[in-house]
Length: 160
Image: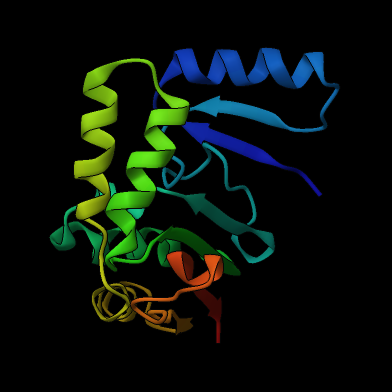
């Protein structure tokens, strides 16, 4: 098994590589587009693509292409965790960004970013359009008393 982290930001990749070395982790990091052939995916049938907190940064119109890129690479499965578009996303983003960021602009953008979260229905529609041939699943949780697994929930796809 090989773990590969990919980001477009070379500074983040350098820092991740440094920290992995300090902690003696068995993984590697590369700069680039994870969905470009040869950057991170060498054998799609043996690849699972995972992301956390990415999808709300993509406009709804770009979501089908995001899922189509994984289909073109032939990945075996994907799981993308992101915020539920429920009422707790804004509060959760505020708490998270107060604790994790120093710059006021990052705190502000983090809250605005969470408000762009896609409801499960939109993610399902986009994934079914882009990744036909995959079994797709995503569930919106209860609105007012959600469990943590409903506040940040995955959309998953496995090759049929």
